[in-house]
Image 1 (cartoon, rainbow, N blue to C red):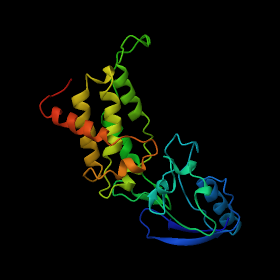
Image 2 (cartoon, helix red, strand yellow):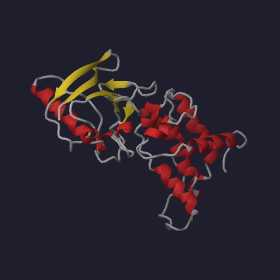
Image 3 (cartoon, rainbow, N blue to C red):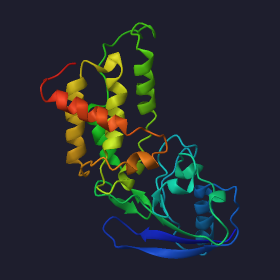
Image 4 (cartoon, helix red, strand yellow):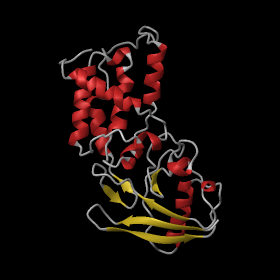
Length: 253
């Protein structure tokens, strides 16, 4: 396959950026999108040019590191019939001769570090604000000592699959991180272990979301449309209900 890439290049966080065009003539349709970028970097290195910086780790759709906007869609989601991460998007999703725009996540809370790499530490601060449960130390408890109703457990698991990639933020016109925040809150609010700190958690994590510079949620739904793990939009509804309840309760259930 012959592919024309238009890639965002930015030398540093305080440097101006611009799209640069590259030609690839030997792209295999079985390559993942990241493997195609590896091919580009091999050619750039051979030409004594600076390779394109991009985030990656597991390359198995698990870690959430590989966030890139492809032809205007986070993870190239609109090119795929199933939810996918960038590392699991393959070049067979494109056609010979295609022109592909590759950009970083663009959101106020995700400043660009270099090229396609952005700083997503704002998500870490949201988790640190309340994405945990407090338990007594000692021997590990029996796994079935605190049973959870199946419907609740299923909902908790669905939200626990969030990998924190940031596609929801990149897709949102307001740059909101509410789908991520709601997934982390709903995951714990559906389980018995998450009840003692439930109200304090929702207030702390929403406050951390706002302090990080994320925009406000207007329930547009683009976040859920591009989520590679199909976190439901209903999770934001759960967050809003818990937030309203927290206004009348200091802590606890």
